[in-house]
Length: 255
Image (cartoon, rainbow, N blue to C red):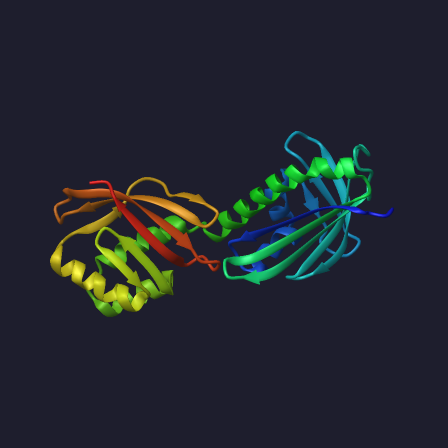
């Protein structure tokens, strides 16, 4: 490989722990989710990789370094030889734990400035797609978590309710809506008891599919009486922690 004096540097935050993020470099099926169908990788030093873009363009390379879950490097070039010949550039990805999950640092090194410039927006897009597919896997159970959240609000037994919320939410969960401003499960649990006392028989149910993007989900709901009559409808914004549990909820009442 010739001298690589031009570089693309990009840093993003990914809503998953490093061990989860790293799987998308080493597992062939996950590798294909962020590059394109037909992309493959042999995740060992010297192993070959193939990137098949959605338009059919192919790039290839070799795994140069792999240190789970911290560092991954590979050579990169196009099968056609243009604009980068096979083995003509180097990509290094470093992962660090971060409060939002993982801090990903990408470095792509080139020997030509004009070619480098062509990849600036490409990596901005590709890493956005990457963050989405990782979050989609981590939060695949978002609908079930939302349902369990609403179910906990109508659970009459405080001990059972505490166990249910402890399974699906972080201990310092923040909750906000028209009637609520709580910090942590310790405040939320008695708040739910009060809601059951002053709004007896009211239950919340999800309406429609969950809309999820990179660890944030929009969930439509209805507040129903015991006989199924609507008392109100709204939308809640769920933010998920890197381990997939609920980190915060903000509820918006429409009526």
